[in-house]
Length: 366
Image (cartoon, rainbow, N blue to C red; front, side, top):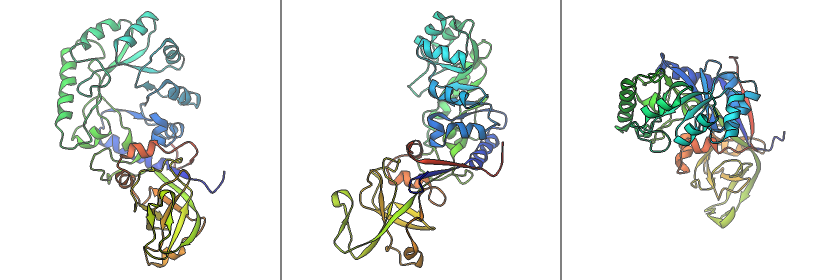
C-alpha cells in the first residue's frame, strides 16, 4: 500500500467507549448498533467485530447484511428498510435477518410467499417517510398472522434541534399506541436514535438505535462536539510537496486564491475523490504537526493546498514532504470541518471513498 495516499485511521477503542456511553444513558435498554453505510465509513465488519456487546446490528440494505454474515458476524442483523422483492425475502431467510415492515406491499409480499420472518413494524409518528400510520397499525398487526413480531419501531425526526417539542410528541404517539394494543410483542418499542439518546433525560423504549454517536460525532444542528464521546476517525493524507509562491501568483483551478505576499504552500494528497468536499470554505483549517494551517485554492480531485507562512512559528517552517496532514480527527473535530463545508458530520464520514486506506487500531479485544 502506497504511503502517498489518504488514510482513515479508525480507533476501535473509541467506538467501544462510545458504545459504553450509550449503555450509561439507557442502561435498561437493548442496543441495536447502526452500522449501515459501511458503519458510516468506518468499516462495518471491523466495527461489528469490536462491538461484541451489541444486542443487534442495523443496516439499510440486504447486501450490507450479507457481507456482515459472510464475514462471520453472528448477532441479529436488522434490515431497516425491509425487503422489497422475493429475492431479498429469500436472502433474509437464508441469512436469518430481522426485517422492518413499513408498507402494505411488503406485508403482501411476505403473506404471498408464505415466509415466516421476525419483523419489526415501523410506525410513522411524524417523520413522514417510512412506516404505517398510527391509525392503520392495529390492522397491520392483525394481518401479520404467522410472522413473529419483535416490536414496534419509529424514527425520531427532529432530535438535531435540542429545543424541538416534536420528539416528545412522537414518543407520546407510539407509547399511547402500544398501550392500546393487545398483541404479543407490540409492547416492545424501539425509539431513540443518537439524538434521542443524547438529548433526552431518560431515553424511551426497550431498544435504542445509536448511529452517529458510536463514531464520536454530534448529531445536533449546533455542531458542537460532545465531550463524553471520542472521535473514532482520523482522516489524513501526506504532504507531497512544499513550494514557494511569489506575491501575485495563484494556486489551483480558477485562481480563486492569490498570494498577497511571497508565501510557502504545502500540497496534500487528498481531494474530493477521497471525500474531502470541493465546496469547503477557503481558510478551513488543516492540521500538520499539531499546527493549524488554512486551506488555499480550490479543492481538486486528488490534492489540496495549505499556506504555511500565515503562521510565523518555527513549526510552520518544519513542515516537510511525508508529514501527515489531518483533515479531521484528533484535535480537528469533524463537526468544525462540516460547518466549514456547509454540511453535517454524517456526510463527511459516509463520504470517505473506497480508495482511502482504512487502518483499524485497538489496544484491547472484545
